[in-house]
Image (cartoon, rainbow, N blue to C red; front, top):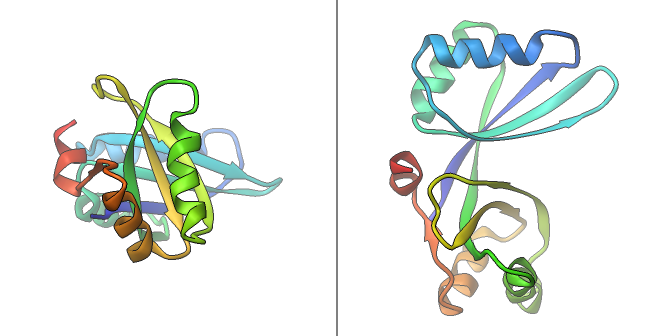
Length: 143
């Protein structure tokens, strides 16, 4: 139950994010979620798009280096402690969190969190056993 995430190194200069989002727009690619971790000279842009194959092709043609990564898209109860409960399930199984970021579309009563862990198969099993809903690539595309 994985979702494909695109990761792109992007220069930390004025207009580079505008250029990136324009490249997606010109190819009619819907950007579902976005996270940027930056340093002085560059950033790592991580995002979920509706069509990752199309995004990879379009971005590569524009000169970007794109990497695909499997991540989990987890439905988290949108209330105090909701995320803590999910993270505790992973910690109990000794699964380390590498990073996470959220996205919101029409999610109802849940927050949607993108999670990258060190043991993805074990994380899926632990979360499924706990009754935690995870989204598939098709679910994300339909949001």
